[in-house]
Image (cartoon, rainbow, N blue to C red; front, side, top):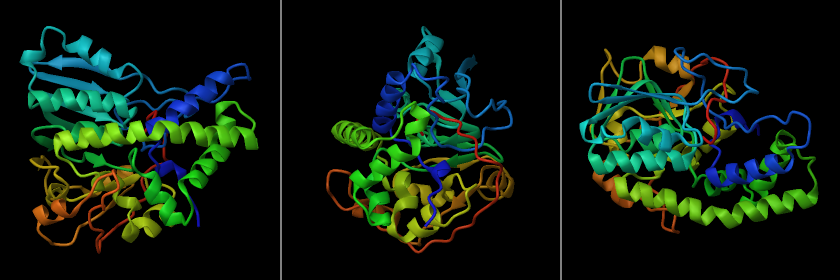
Length: 330
């Protein structure tokens, strides 16, 4: 069973510990920066060397729209607030092109949007934390021609991945440590592995709770964020799909099943377009034809209640370009 780590969301509680390990190992020679696994960078953004930090997000204002290009990096939300200072009452929409980033940064912007009924326009790419927190929070959601909205996990993914692999969450985290310790400037040891697992587990409940509270606030089911790890999808998405597969998306009519409403595709034909599927290497999950309200009401959240139903699904794998680790935490 092959694990394609390029398609995984790196939860913020794991990233925080990873950054701490990197800082502790700062005396080593040129440690590699922590990069989350994410999709290929859009063509309009020049992709730097994968071992270098991606450039920070940029913000500009065009009439009543804030244009955002780049990752949800550290300080993203504060820079956004600075960009819109004294103009908040004039803003009605965000136009974004982002491969994702830090969950907390995205959730803060998502709350800001939801409280002001801000529309969102996806211009090329909204992936990972951008899809989880910003696209879902928009009042009206417009996907431009040949653009893609993609998911590949959340803070609540660990139980589903561990279950699919037939191991415990602790064992899953130990594998994460073994795979990435060298990137953090640390030589893998049993003590280091145990410390990593302990610290990540201690911070996990807060991260999961904050994400679920955010999703409850905007009325979106976590099922959309972890769909590729649910039982019916797990083997083909996580274990056996092409290494160039970056994540998944849904037909617009199926997004509503998760509470992701008021979505419009501005291109010709159906969403996603053939060009977008090829460009970003996504799997398209088509849900069974059951009542959307029934599906939503059957779902349960991360606090021990049952997840929403799995499905018989139709999926397609598209080759895409080489995967570029564009975002910092997902």
